[in-house]
Length: 361
Image (cartoon, rainbow, N blue to C red; front, side, top):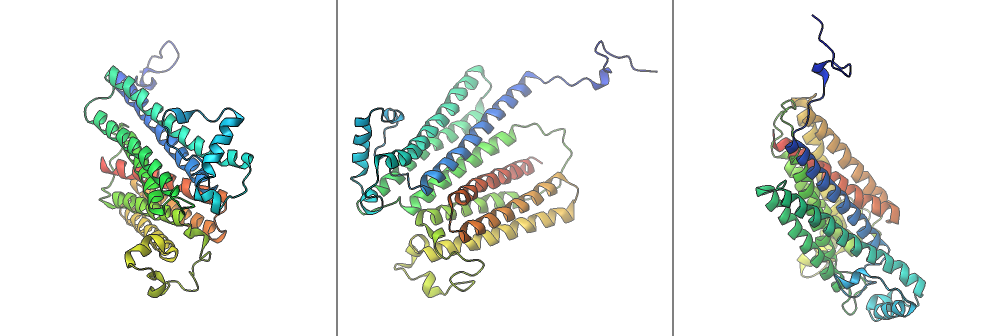
């Protein structure tokens, strides 16, 4: 017996299933959190450009509220420029800089700080609205408040980092503080993506093989590699030893060169040879682990979604390593340095999605 068509000519069995208000609300919250995650990636990109253009010390004061207004008159610009001329970076690196050149580096740092303010607004205003409507409650609300607190801490870390570069004799920020700033930004991104990925209803999806702890270990390795990358950036270790696969003529430099600074623990931050070597070695280990993870899942369940995700992660890790090699060999041009930093955020985000989806199976 034929099935009667509806008034629109579509069989009832094919009509789309109406979403419940709860599902629509969760979709809206998930979209908002992913927008926040995209803004964090943009923040990392602008921060990278600020660092690579040497702009981070152009604003010598931290004014969370009044600092949102840039200089509007020639007199105000001259006053800001005079503050910059008092610090060591101007005296030792940029002496003789013109006002127009100063305006260029000021724009990067001002834009970076403005984007931080924008992220704060995009976070807290919708959060209050969702909370008031009862869309966000309980554990989700507490989790988001924790992420918001981490964002506030990140702003303070950013200023502590800048302040380290304003000390007499300093021409750039302290490497370990830059690495901390980048790592905390990465943790915030990971938390946002974890929450957003967990809000999607996957109850109707087919069951997947258990992936174990490997996806979470992969996330941890990526975060550690980003932290080491921050040390490379902060110490400018990428501008030295610009050959691959050999480093200073050997695959593994001698211990006397890797630990030439006393006390020995300071080599991990101050010795550019060891800083870059650690970043290289962890890259090899991360890629090897990602390939092993994909291989094991492909053997166990070659057609499963989890195996496809693991394979994709292995491909992303390989691509990021290749991009890092290109960045090193070309001596860190602006486009390559930015691409390497932003792609690291993409790799991290995909690893977190992989770990989150695998965790609910």
